[in-house]
Image (cartoon, rainbow, N blue to C red; front, top):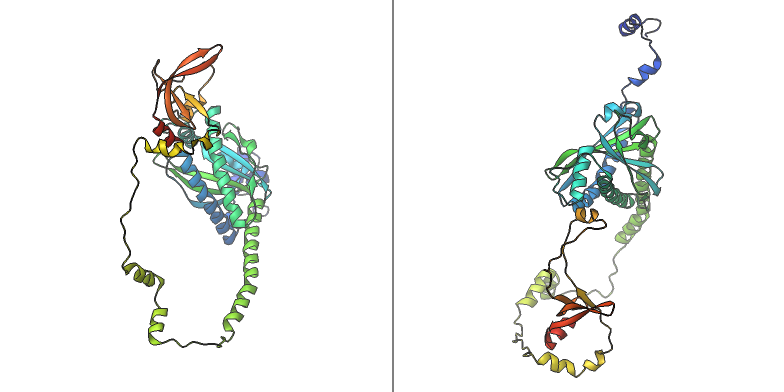
Length: 388
């Protein structure tokens, strides 16, 4: 309404039997980020997120074995009453609380399809055909990836703010605003600061990852950052002034030595040139001589002092076989699972001392215990070499 006059939209709404309230006008209000954060605060929040998530990208890249880029932060203000417009797709929300250094909450939001690819890569697959229906194992994989990211971000913030910053273990939930699920993860506040980053994972993902912060917490971060930088500048001023006094002090001219022309030239030579002069001098080159070793030499040389080593305990291990499996295979193990080894049935087992192979044998039963009968053993010289 303008004064006592109704607008055309309000008149049409009244003719349709609809009520016009100030609450509906508030819900249609567009929030301008400049009304809550000035340019300096926006730049500081964006740069803070850019630095912290730069290290997070490195951590995620190591986990996924893929090139990860997180760039181009964009700061905006969102209304929690209009979440369905802000998050129209199914998402995954990861929430952490700051337990040391700050008091606040930080929420990461990524699309569910992107989270499925991250989970697929974490479980040892190629990420090309992920299961978009995230079960408990996939959510745990995403949670661990985000835990590594947020841990790296907290470490970066510790360096930026020059104090210890720690976070709680992340909690994860599916966020579907159309169905009203996962909304309880978000802070109970009307307005939130959203910092959106472009997320690229190899050729599999080209999307965005969003960071949600309460407005008050975001402004506190900026104030702490600015005050911390100001303190550093103030502390450096006395040192700069002291250094200036030292520089301005007249030089002491006692025991001054006036160099001769050839001395002056040599004193101004660069260290690299002096090193080059030493290298160019004729070195004393001699042919290296080595002892001749045969099969008996190590044994004969070691036998003299072998009695000093006879009481040293060594760890003897019998290896039936081995294999390698991905994280996905390990997580799928259960009671009754069969693991195939790299040896055929009936093959000799390996006998190792301090993880060094010294013999082969066959498994036998002695009373109620397993044992190994040695069938083949390496030579004494080889055994001594392996014990070194």
